Image 1 (cartoon, rainbow, N blue to C red):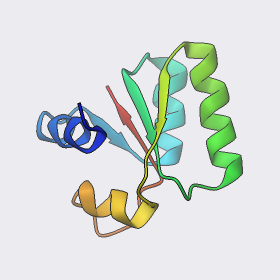
Image 2: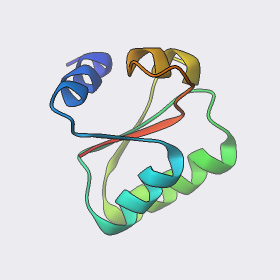
Image 3: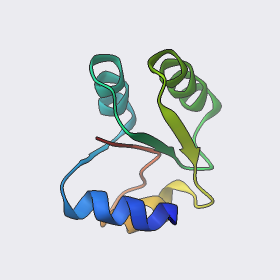
Length: 86
């Protein structure tokens, strides 16, 4: 299934956490299904999320779209670098 379709379905069912800090907190406390990172996310953010995801055993996907496009896909008026699908 296409990654954008997965994100849209998760948004409809309200199973998405948007934002870097909230994503890290959710990842440390729970086990999400998938973590999505924009392709232009800062290296520090990407490495920290990938490290924590590796410890938790969660799959990480880096999208082909940048943070502005990911924000538009989520229906937000701001860039989104990271989102977690519960």
